[in-house]
Image 1: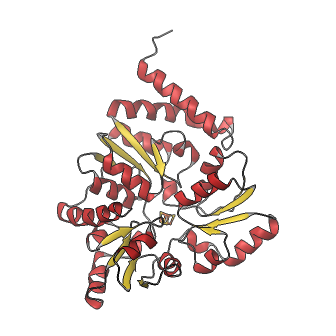
Image 2: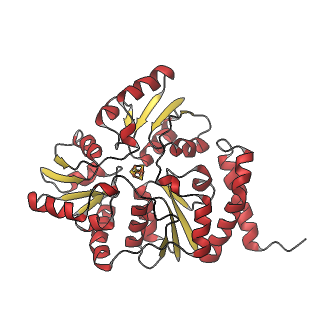
Image 3: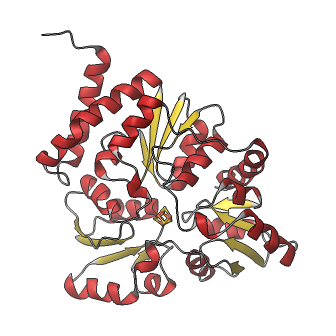
Length: 332
Ligand code: SF4
């Protein structure tokens, strides 16, 4: 029998800890398929001084199996800004990797699949933002983090679904432009006296939910509590019990421990939150984000083995986009 190296022992322990967390949502036979990659990724992270940031929409074997930090866009941006690692692997979509690079230019930022995009980020260009600035001179431009670095660079400040209202009100003006998610803008507009000029971008996952769906969940699951993401259409949010970012939804479940709940958002969220809340029954309608699902254990492993694909942002764009993101992080 060979000598077991210390980094092997550490990786084995992490793998065992991860399975203890996900055994409620991943059967042992399925976990067996993932084990080899999880062990390899844990060792590679150690060798490369790398960390993995995973969005809440990643599948449980990534979220619980290999992520060092898991969270919403805001949490991942904050972690990226202060990370000491040489390498950051973004288990999320491209704009998240760009944001990590902006905030931590010294680290090498890798995305396991460069095609992991976002319908919101693709709905608007930097030229569009410049035209809006000409059309509405002096009106602050708030850009959702779900945008390219080039779009952020043309903006005054960024926001996430978790802090959008706070950012809108932080200017102390009567009118702002909020890009590119029309539904997020409309949902925030209901909670503030500030007039919000919106763009017509939509999240292809959240726009699929309808108020009739919510009615059906309630009929089929008596007593269910409905938590909706603010990227959903306003009529969906209106018939829900609570609306908030993915981080706010998780907090709500953990604080209130509902008997039965439905998270009106991307499907992997329920699996990830269920693993930590075994006493809560999750009703799980499934709307997958095809972009998030491009990230797999296999391509995370490949990214760390080959140190690809590295994400770069042009210096001029990075400097201006960083200002918009850092202003957002500074708003508490
Ligand atoms: S869930 Fe929606 S907003 Fe998030 S990455 Fe997918 S398409 Fe973009």
